[in-house]
Length: 163
Image (cartoon, rainbow, N blue to C red; front, side):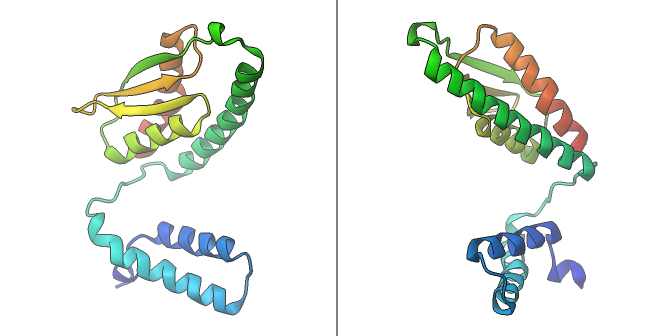
């Protein structure tokens, strides 16, 4: 019964919080409407999520989020320094193919989104068989180091989280 009412409890919590942030005012009516939306939207979309991803280690997801936020902050500074002080002829943009060990589509999506969220890198394409991710890097003298960094910093942790 509870599973039918809240098919995606974490999504419901996020939707309610997001709604309250959007309206920017906590009133009983906004809480009621946010709660209603947080229950109805996951029920209406549950058929599109037949195989929900199972997080093997959900607490590691919080640590992963912290690492990604830190990397975004550092990358913003690095990109600003590149754009402001490095002459165009010295910028070494590279396309990097990152071989993937991840198999779960959700984990690959999180990895691609993480790479794109981090300034200076963009996930461009996933290979047809899902074994590699094509990434564009704004500046890199060593593409292999960028690939190794992505694999050790993000992919390894996502393998632990999604199992």
